[in-house]
Image (cartoon, rainbow, N blue to C red; front, side, top):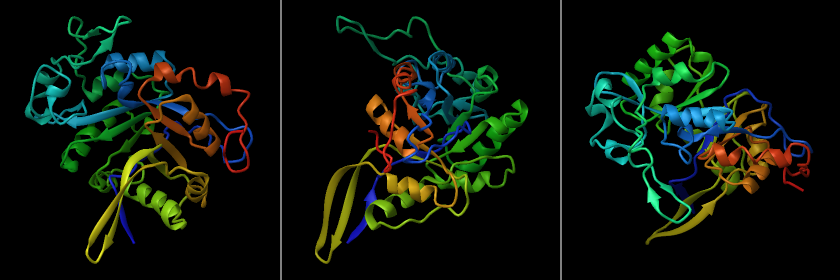
Length: 320
């Protein structure tokens, strides 16, 4: 029997904007909001003020940013474990003070390919610096929803530091919190103003139960925020008395049945992660996905145009 699907999907919980949610079979779906992943990692150096500015100019509806904590307890925007992944420095973010971090060029390894195939590093000559969360909140317009992805552990110190920044900027109402680690969800439960996605584990379990057991474990309350990858490489493990067998599969867990389950007790806010082409965007719209997390807002800005008046969906939530 199936024991579990390893490393599975992450369909990420949530659109943040409060955009309307179209149900499957509505015929004229509301097109999903465009969420700039790490500010638009495909267009500019990720999690930088330059990326945020570019995402907004390219029509992103929401901004997704990744947060870690400096050695002196300041929330900064950076995703990898090692500074060497994106900057000329090395070591963990937590090993340097905020003053040291904000002097680093976060675009050091960002590559572009010229028409003749030459690979260049455009931000080595024109650095784009690693920002604090506070500096990002200061430049993002108040009407643009923000999703903060918590990456550092333990959760409690970072949650407290992020809460202080959100207090200072009066930003709780425009921020929603996400993490792949459930401990953040537990910690932020103690902050009355915190708005969170349900845990990734909960979202994954709902999707797998629909896909593998044809069983719906619907959210208890309406309005839940949930997100997971649009599709993802997974491995199903089946155990036997004498061993086990593994089957790799490209899993697409968001389906009409999954959406009916999430909406069973009232409309849910569903975000699909890592959706990066127009055909998938069309299918997501027909399913009633509220928002999609994309790497390139520049590419995504063209997706909605052709569907603004022409997209039609059948009763199963599939595009006609």
